[in-house]
Length: 390
Image (cartoon, rainbow, N blue to C red):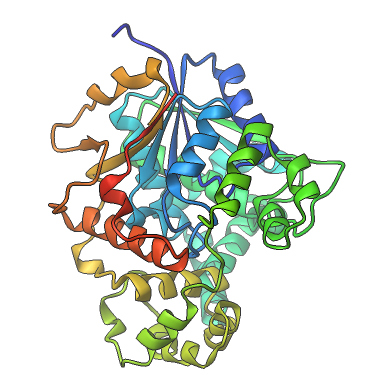
């Protein structure tokens, strides 16, 4: 296959909306890429929640919105802090020889992204001292890091605290750490990353689109999504193939009450494991998180830990970088990419083996079964489902 220019995008598409479609278009326009490759979260997302729609449905949305190949990020990299999320996605793109990584960023934050990434990779004494002081005051690590970083760079703390900015910095750090020959291409975001309402004057947030879906506000949803993506969403809802936020809450509460040993869960520190069983007192996922939350422990961190309780994740068995990626879908012109892995120990798989040979694959299969349980769908879909091909 003739060498082609590849641009990578790391995403969740939960669900895909007009902002995502615009970003895919901008990625191609700004880089001149021949192929756009998306590395996408699977059954569970980075915020620790089951995705609204199945991975293959979301992959088809991405393909119809302009992507050429969609790969699933293994769950041990999708349900984790931003650094590992970014490292996992970038590692997969590097296997394909991607030349660019295109990501959203707050417009005012773009000038400080590279400086922030460099400082975090090579922290000076001033930054370290301020970070430790804020942590000692009981501030949660993400907030403390953002505050110390902002003070060191002379930037507004609120700017570096925004999710898009924090994740963009992690992408740059991942490129530095891997010494990857990948050019970062930040695209200014329009609208609020976590806006709770659909706003007519700007691109929507996935948070607002999910809320409108759950409220069955279909007119609002339709205007926020590309036509083909909305049609796929409607089909999924009409056939019952969607996952409500609290569908797995009874199972989670039961698991918490079994006196599970939390010491092997990923992301434990600062005694958070001693509070996890408090979550069993909540009747909804929101109440469960709030029962554990303190100033020191962020909402997202607790939510991810609860997801790992469901998954029975053993941090000791996790790989530092992905060793596989499940192919969710592709356009026929991109099929040759799947033979281009630079590392023989890495595999692209079009279907999960009946007896997954690695712990990472076993986790992916477990996550898929949990998603199907919550969506009242048959188990074992990941072993039967083939890639979407357009």
